[in-house]
Length: 520
Image (cartoon, rainbow, N blue to C red):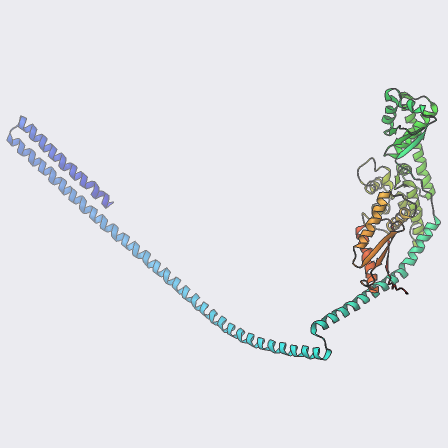
């Protein structure tokens, strides 16, 4: 503020002086024209007074500004001294803290130095002991090598090989003993139960396929079945959902369809039309409808006959119909209804041998494949479909679990479920029960032999008895008698983990030594 006052006062003073000079000159000029010399003197006096007043005013302003500047500088000096004093006090506190920390660090360093010196001494002592121990060990090894006549590496190899052979023999003996003990306790009893059940029940198989053949009285009937512009055959295919194949086969028409019930309806309808002789769209529709009713009645009869044969009563009428539909369903050439009857009978026999509920076991065995009756028409496996049907018609939980677990999809929760699983395997795996295509059969045998040939020491392997036995010929020099037991177990385990097969596969490991010489 004082600096600003001085800056303002100086220009004001200059302006006043200029104004005074200008007024003086103006007055002088005017007085020359109008007044006399006396008036000029008065104007000059006034001008001097104005200038003196301006100079006095400027000096007063200057003094005031200097006083203000001095006061301001004193005030700033006091504030600076106060701030400097506070900073010095804070620095002194920091110095004290730093000195304290330095003292603590020095103490720690001293302690660490003492520990390092102690550790170095201990390390030196330890090294001396280790060197002494190493020297003693070396002397012992040399003495042992001198006494035994073998180096340490040779002795180590002999020891390892001896231990390995002993352990291998012990493991082989243990496996053999455990297998023999298990066979003594379980195999005999299980074999008796299975054989008894199989001997007490046997049933014929009706092998169905995906086609049906209808015999014709003559080849002229083919033209009548086709009809004008093919309208008869189109009507028949539309009404039944089955494809008619009319080829060069003499006096025969092939019905091809994935759904066996539709194929049966088409077969009955076509046979009736051939006997009647009148073949046209209206008659085809009427005959197909009659054939459908006939098949429905036959389905119901087959279902009821199955329940009566097995001795299972109290089934829901719809479940009986589902059972009847299985008459027209096959699995690998095995009739589904006949298979279910077999499983029911076997389950009952196994349950009676084990002291379980025979009726419930038969019921679970009869319904274990019920999902196959409609698995062509809905999504999901026959296990999922069958469990849904059983739940829908409020079957026993044991029956539902038997349906869900008979292929190992779920864990069995009762002994009856295990019995049904065993009966299903017996019915499916017995010789002649199911047919396999040649490709599938040969591929399975090849897989079995390839898997066995991967093992070290195997010379040759042969899959025999339709893949139910694998004979493994081993190299005698590479596989010992103890190794054979372990190899047989390893091969069996790998077959179980890798391949899918019905029943069981016997692993027969053969080790044979031959010596050949010639008499000359």
